[in-house]
Image (cartoon, rainbow, N blue to C red; front, side, top):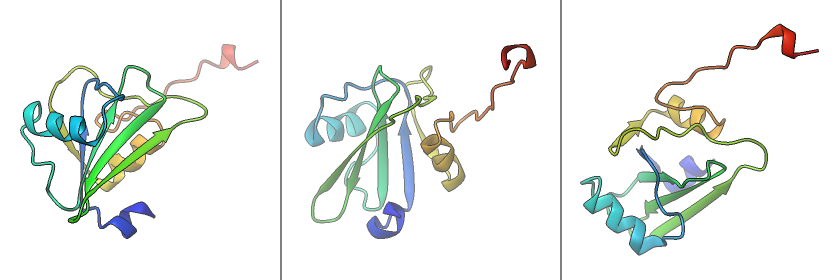
Length: 118
């Protein structure tokens, strides 16, 4: 729904952790300095995750200003890629995986041990 309204064409995932207390200016500086990307690229949504994996922030340049998004998962946590300090471009399918709480770069469904079910 947001993708259609905001005209999102690319989703960039900031791997690793980011201080989610940062606002628009701080996140825009991280995009440019740490990841070497242009925060003013219209239609590109940049996603960030902090140490707590139950929330994420997004930053989107709308052409006339920034849109700051914040999502908190009420039940469960994101499986966010933490090992690399690079930004990764996500496909639409990978973005959907992320919003379901799966690691978009390595989506794995956990094996269930039948002994632990009952």
